[in-house]
Length: 258
Image 1 (cartoon, rainbow, N blue to C red):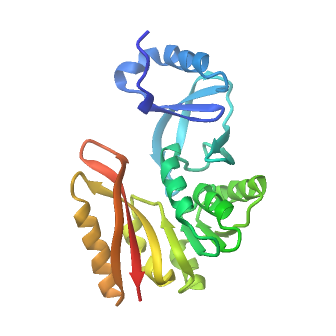
Image 2: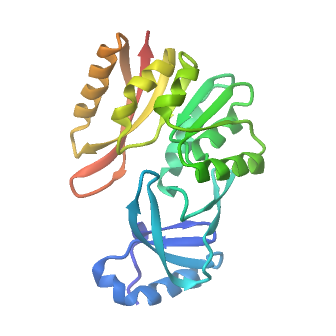
């Protein structure tokens, strides 16, 4: 059997998710059974369908195994449970979450926007026992599972359910570090990011970028900073992963100077 390429599926502990190419559809069952044979922990294999709605959730089609939607996932020493139908989650940001958590100095005030079920916030809180970690998330189900994950990992994170644009005013000049992992529309929240940043705050900013055009994203950040009468210094950038033939997901780290 010709095995499916590794990049076309991801495993959340006991659940595997496939993104099937048209030519693989007829072999879906065969592919799923092979995955379960090789990975004994996997109890269910689903096909990913289209992302939908403001919460970026998906529908799924069961291909093989049990109709079980609750994932039990371990990443960088932390444990997460979540219903794959009700929240957005990507294991492909595992390295990024580790990279940022390792940079945090104990005692920092950290603000995680678009926090999901808490993978950034919880991994940061595990390293940052003396500081304060605040996680803002719109999806009530993501907040529900984030609270469960906070308890599961025995860390302290303040969970705020609601729209970043409305909730951010309670955190004016609060943050030593801000994480903004919403590449599709992070540019719409630059004003709020700059509002919440202290002087010398480090921002980890994710965005879609045309391949080889990361400087265009940096110009957008600089223009918004100028509008808000602050300065930014860029300190790090990298391509997180390819998104499409013409686009990448990138991360740009910058320091806010007020």
